[in-house]
Length: 280
Image (tube, rainbow, N blue to C red):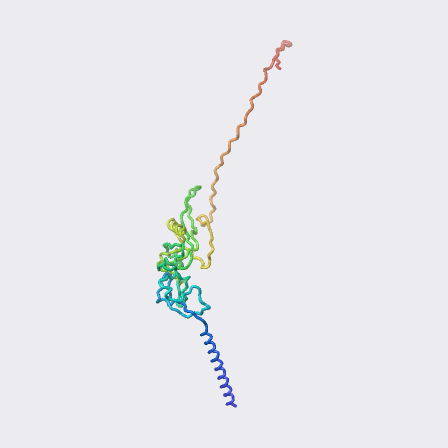
C-alpha cells in the first residue's frame, strides 16, 4: 500500500515537472520572437549642461512596439551633444533632453529660448534657508521706500511682489536638480525674460530682495498692491481735506434807470389867514 502511494506521488511530480518545462520553453520562444531595436541609454548619471561623450553611453535591446519618441539607435548620433536635463543611469537618451546641435556646454545650454540668466546675491534668509534649489520656482519680493506722495509729502515703506514663478537655474556654481538637501549659498541664478531682468536689476538697486518659495505645481499668478507700514499696523489712512472749490461769480443784474416824473404843479391857497401849498 505504501509503495502504491509513493509511485503515485512520483508520477504526479514527473507530470508537473514536464508541464512546467513545456510552459517555460513556450515562454522563452515567445520572448525570442518579439522584435527589438537598439536604443542608446546612459551608462552613467549625466548632469545637465554636460557634453555627451561615447563613454557616457551604451546600447540595449528595446521592444520595437514600445520605442520612446525621440530615442537614438546609434551612439555616434549623440557626439558632442549637450544635455539640458539630467539623465539617470539606464535611462534612454531622448531628443527632448538635449540642447540644439552645436550648443556649447555649460549653464547657457539649459537656458530656454528667449530667456536670460541673472544672478542675485542672497543670504540664509533671502535664499529661503537654502531650500531654493535648481529646478524650483520662486517669487521675488522687494522692500523699499516709495516715492514721496504729492498730497502729504511722506515717503512710504512698502513690500511688494515684483516677479512671480521664476525658475531657479543654479545656486552658487551648482546647477544639479537631483538633490533635495538644502544649501545655504550667497548667490542664486534665475531664469528671466529680458523685461523681467530689467525689473530685477532695478529692484536690487532700490531696496532689499527676498525669495519666496512656490509649490512645484502652483502656476497661478496673484496680483497684489503691496503692503505699507500703515496697513501692516492697521492704522487708518489720514484723509486729506479737499481744497475749497472757487465759487463762480454771479452774473451782474442789470438795474433799470428810475422813471423821471414830470414836474409837479403847485397852487398857493390862502384861507382864513392861513397859507397852504397844494401840488398835483
